[in-house]
Image 1: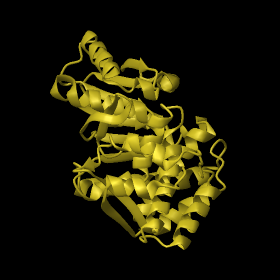
Image 2: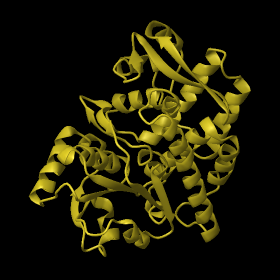
Image 3: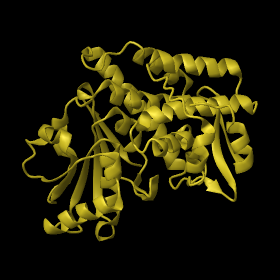
Image 4: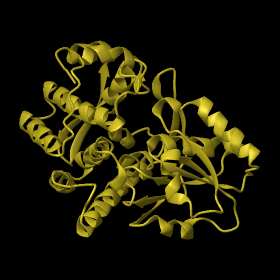
Length: 340
């Protein structure tokens, strides 16, 4: 099972790097200054924008690895948010048919979700993560040191992913997280608050890893982690990457919950409770987009099979959700009147 190391400071990272190998750090240019002391690493800086998460960028990184004479015994570090960790994991899994790698997420979203689970990928023809691999990193290094530097919007999209995981698997952590984040100042937390945040992030990562261990290649139980992502990815495609992933996932979770109420899976009082918790944390996003306008993007989703779409319907907080195959015509009908 993949290891997760959680520390307050990044200077602990060196002890986890394998000895006697060349380290190549694929790093978001925005965080390069934090790693200047690691002078023995080879840095490959990228501008980590969603529209750069492509095969072309992955090919450019591979070219730079070749120029730097990276061999099969090299060790790759992916340092940055979800775009960087997705790209670095993808490159490591295909370069010279695969080299060892680890991830250092620098956003709350990546620490809680993108860097956990081994899914690596690139976008293609406007569709999110259309190409990719499932290859596990050697380890993930989490440090809350980075989170104080994030814009509030970027920090909140990480909250959305954490509450999603807790909503699926841990009722106690869902309410604990909602209460904690409702008053957390991420720019100037107390030492006690920051320690609490580290424990919540680690708890979220462990829950996801436990599920991934049962279904690494996403043929069964792992699909529940897609809660909110079908609508969320469609929203991202609709806006051509102008809104944040976590914002669209939050909107997708609430839309999925409303769909669940329509189908009689979730009680309306549970929907109201989830909505109140998201609102208290500042992640109640409303874009004014009709769900019917997103169907054309959903039609290209990887979860479409045999004319039906596998959709995750939450039922009870932390304990129960349903994966249901919904024929596309029925799904279109259910989307009428639903606004994200």
